[in-house]
Length: 394
Image (tube, rainbow, N blue to C red; front, side):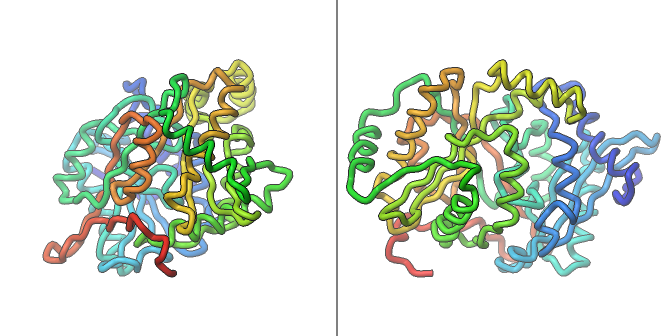
């Protein structure tokens, strides 16, 4: 076997092609857009290169057939937040061959070790965790946009290499054609009528305000997670720009108390329901296809990617009121039948409880693994976020 670093146009194209080869007989897999993958590894496009670095490789067998790929990266804002400096590996695709997989893993390990890392998480993204994060181990159905899909045999490849579970990610599905639990709506009705509370949906016209509000809420709401880093405004603006062709302004909601931002929810139409026809290419013909399919209302599913409530207002029922407004929007768009709640980590008991309270039904399970380079080092899984954070200080 021969492993080659991606360092020119030819190898970059082969990196993309590797996934198409690995999944050529799997009709469930949906090819991500080539431009999305390319942007991830373009320092001019990916904000994470301002505080990190990445490299990637492709793997050939002895007959020069492309059989795998992988990437490794270091996010310097998070790498040193653990007992062992920890890098990442991702975009792993491989045939069902232990030696091939281990060569890809070893290559990442060597690259990270040479740069001072003592562990690696994977498969993860060189970016935010709402995209390309975790290994699919249960629920091998069509993936929503940004969610990882893998062959079932990948799990054994990771675990035979002594990757250990760092945290488990659960995705639930919400059938919006069914009514929400009555108790949920009673709480929502009570909250939305209380003095001082207001709810607004996102608009591109006032995007600067909403971006600032989202960052303020996110940085406050997620501050207690062990791996927390403040959200980058530039990265958020780039994500909004990329999502603009598919984004529905009424799918992003904010809650305010006396005009102070206290909560938000981001839901996006599932672009994969159209991208499955494009094979990763966004040329002129496929752009026209995309517009046509969108007008034909081929998108019937949405994905809630992230939400947050500042600690002071947690357990106050704010989420119920946001869902009330979201339901009113969906009532006007009856072609939407499902909402994917993805994903919630096993370290987040409050969000797991919220998924249950709205009637979410289990759909998929992903695992984010960690590999310690020193076998004698003590492994620690991700720490649970405290349930009651109202009185805790930064």
